Image 1 (cartoon, rainbow, N blue to C red):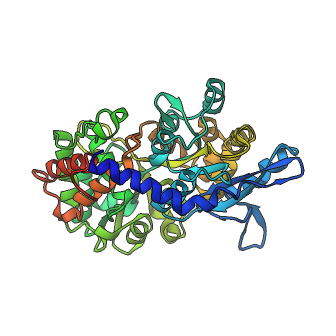
Image 2: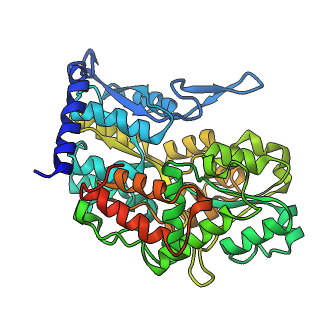
Length: 440
């Protein structure tokens, strides 16, 4: 057994030991109604079903509201209670892995980041769907959402909501720079426009998953990919040291070394990038759909505009990042049939519209985008639907966590990226990590 293999076995044993006490606390039932425990990611109302507006009126909230609604509509088939996961996606993964490695029966449903869906499926953590379930639960879903919930040619989770990034900008800045936003724009054009107008281009470039999201979108937008054969696991062919990888590095380097870079670029996450965009010198921002509902942009809402994610090159169409949440059923829950019945309700058109209107997180079902209320609330919804279908999900590999950490570590900070060296160095580092020759 190699060093890497021993490390993985040791890690699994440690995780299982740490969580061994959890497996005994399975889902409780009230009478004949099974209680399903759903681990949710933080959203607009967390554990409370409703949100209260400034006028004192209550309105449907986030995932907790969907749990209440579907429990009531099930007429005794199941009752859903929610537990809150940490805010950070990596911490969400860690908590779920610890519990599932111990075969914790207290988890029935989980809100799972698409980046980790393949890993959980490969580990046997997810209850397999029948072919009929796969057809029924994916019907009407956007292609990009289905792709991000598929592993080994099988749907392994149900898209709950979809997310994509677009280019947000201030109309006054684009007009001052003479940038025609009715046509596709490149990263180079956006950065040049910001420099010309003494404004900034805000992105996510902290040492975390969001930076890998940007790099992946840039490589995909040049026609490349981070790895060719994700099904090969740790033996997958890494393809960053390529012309497409160099094109991505040129964009990162250009922004990192330019006057358009916000002061906190190398420490910017989603919230930080919205804050820099909202500052007096904010000009352009790439970020997720919920920006439109962010209170930071309210003071200049009349000057706020949007268009498709920038192109890496002038000839290749952009491949926007894909995010969101998949709803997964645990392989160790006591009520898998009831859990899939609940999943069907939680991800229905009605549920996805309700959730989108409350949270700003967009549907995975295509028909919801045609709803008149949705169009009125989110005038850019058609662009979101287009972007989700054109998106580039992160590679669906069970080793994505290792690959991502090695990737964003070797490209950080953005100002240090060298297009002639960084792609080759990062490719070698990722290969060494996967083969147990280097540690993260």
